[in-house]
Length: 119
Image (cartoon, rainbow, N blue to C red):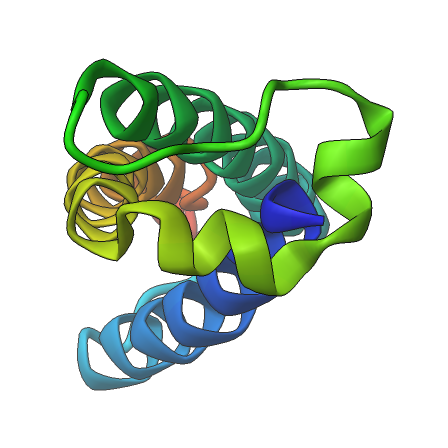
């Protein structure tokens, strides 16, 4: 459940960010290629944020976190209240990585205009 929440947040906020970047730079780009690369990056970043957040939250011995199994992910509120600082730190770090990967994908997806030859 945490993975799905991070994916939705990353995909929407990151998508809006890169839509603004692409619009302000007046770039010609292959939108389908960038969309696929960004969606894949969002999936990987969300998975990383969920796993790292749970590992960081589990590492804190002050709070009692649910074990990482199917029942723990059903109780989404328990997972979030376990150690929300660790989960948010992991989410922020993975979002920064997603933005860097998105910039690389943006550069990889741009179309170079070939000069028009006369003749």
